Amino acid sequence: MKFGIWDVLAIKQFVTVRTRILFCVIVMIAVVSSCDDDDNRPSGEYADGVFVVNEGVFSAGNGSVTHFSDNKVATQNVFGLVNNGRALGDVVQSMLIEDNVGYVVVNNSKKIEVVTASTFESLYTLEGLALPRYIAVDDGFAYVTEWVSFTEPGRVSVVDLGNRAVVDQITVGYGAENILEDDDLLYVSNSFANTVSVIDEASHEVIKTIEVSSSPGELLEDANGKIWVVCGGAFGGNDGALVQIDPSKSKQENAESVIKTIALDMNITYKAAISPDGTNIFYFTDKEVYRLNISDTAKPNDAFIEETNATSFYGVGIDRRTNVLYVADSKGFAGQGTVYRYQLNGDAIDNFTAGIGAGGFAFHD
Image (cartoon, rainbow, N blue to C red; front, side, top):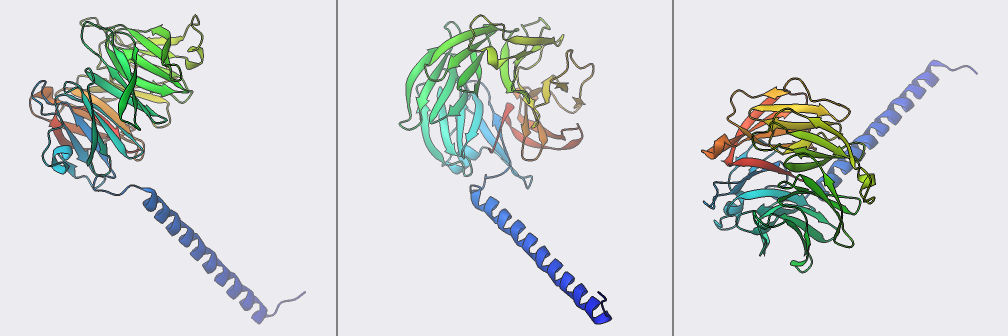
């Protein structure tokens, strides 16, 4: 079959028109998808960016939360700014965001301020807690770790978020610190007792106690579903460690849960962050950040980041939306803190001012 010049031109015109139509369809799909994402995102002045938890000076009642927007605008004391100048409280310990609800744990004020995360408007206050530290939320319940006191065992208070009341209290080890929910189990690091308590969510009972290294704090789940315990080390002991445990052994009381312990040969702040892909742990001490791959069997030889302008790092976090590493410098609680931002390859981005005792982060889910 032979084609004349007019046939060829007609075919070219058809192909061109069809290509244009296909291009327009792709653009429309992208626009609609983008609109859907925008529609699903909560609205409000603080609907993007990151929140910095600033402890404040102990007993001064000047703890606060700083917001740093995607447009690089730092807003100090957002709780007081939005809520008619109300003080957030004494020692703002941690913050969690779940379904656009922010839970701000205020340790020495013995309460949790609950806000709409995207606007920071107050919803209600959970009071009557005993030195609360951290919180996990699952299936309509909040689980709050509490030191209780320095002489009594710690506990986990179970809060029914529907009626905003404590419905149960579970005794764990001394110095109940961080908490991680995984597969209907709760893992609680007991920072004064060098153990991790495993709690069955259904029965509210401790089903296992795992011995780890000194001063356990942060709990992180890696890419393989294993849990890492960040242990700061005993005072003056230089025995900080990263301990990996196997959650599949948690329901076997006599099975060994610890897979490996990586001695760090120094003490660290028992806070850490894990990369979005779950393969690298970032921990710190003094002015240095270290990076450990979960497959490593020994500590890294050199620091990953060394910030000569810092005074003393006090917190670390990673924004999974942007793959940006945030590191807080508390400045020794002598004034407003500074937050340094880095790419996950260690390249510096910038820094911004936060509040007194900057030491934690909360990211939108």
